[in-house]
Amino acid sequence: MSEEKKVVTPEPLIQADDLCKFFQLSRKATLKAVNHVTFNVNKGETVGLVGESGCGKSTTGRCLVNLYTPTSGHVYYKGRDIQTFSKEERMKFHSDVQMIFQNPYASLNPRMTVGEIVTEGMKLHHSKLSSAECQQKAEALLARVGLNKEHMNRFSHEFSGGQRQRIGIARALSVDPEFIVCDEPISALDVSIQAQVINMLKKLQQELGLTYLFIAHDLSVVKYISDRVIVMYLGTIVEEAPADELYAHPVHPYTQALLSAIPVADPRVTKAKKRIVIKGEIPSPINPKECCQFTDRCPYATDRCREEVPVRKEIEAGHFVSCHLH
Ligand SMILES: Nc1ncnc2c1ncn2[C@@H]1O[C@H](COP(=O)(O)OP(=O)(O)OP(=O)(O)O)[C@@H](O)[C@H]1O
Ligand SMILES: [Mg+2]
Image (cartoon, rainbow, N blue to C red; front, side, top):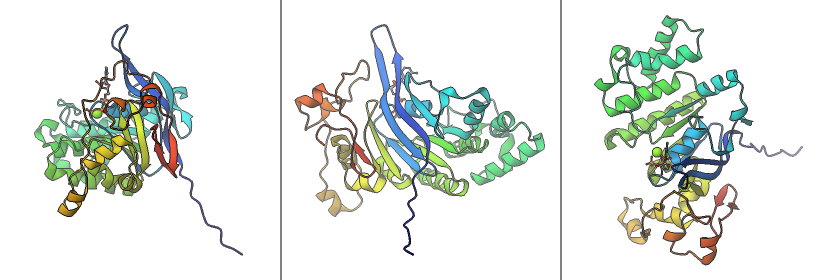
């Protein structure tokens, strides 16, 4: 009997489908923070979401966890549109999906003790747990993120940035989530402790079977932690690929420029690598033109790029690009 090769099809846990989030600033000014974005995050994987400041990464993350209601488009969780959830399903969703925020200084309530911060969600979502059980669970969580039970009665302002982010991570884990949006969780931290926090997030993922959307500016961080990477520019996705593939064969001129900006330790490689400098400033997301958003800064732009929105094409298995040149 011939052995059949087992094909494992990835199972989407959360999906953004043609997602838009617009902010109406005035009668005539629409800020298109997220502009027709489609992607999947499969169970157990880490998807990196990268791009310059203001390109819509946090807004995308907030739509996924239902902190923002999309202007149009859908978010599907385990195949179901989250806007159609019943009250109970919505409650469950809000414990299944969590967010770790960019700034651990602003995202923790200074008037709450660490114990209160970590047990708040448990009390809401796991109301069957007794106070003693919540306490025990909180202590175990703090130990998991490298803090200890003596920290329970202290306030967040007594801690360093790295410790605060650990408290933020313990809070996210307190409700036993499946999916976490990590919104630049290390960008506000000292370089010396960034690696510790990243390694901890990786370890937690393996131990708890978590799925991450990992948001960052820094393509080098994303490379280390991501299975797949999505590159955003001015509210749109320009390229998406498995991490190795994206770094080896970037296709979109914007991805190529972002990658060329990563410093390389080996001087021989640095010499061989041509730095691509993107001209001009990132344009305003207010009333953007219906065309490729990168046109004004792209060294290869043609008339078509200025007139037509590029459609997403799959150029290799799992490697998508939205560019008229391909
Ligand atoms: N509540 C809001 N009201 C109006 N505009 C907003 C709001 N939230 C975000 N924006 C705008 O939407 C755009 C995308 O913002 P977003 O925070 O998603 O970007 P980002 O990629 O996360 O940037 P950064 O890397 O700086 O965190 C920006 O132009 C921002 O000013
Ligand atoms: Mg952000």
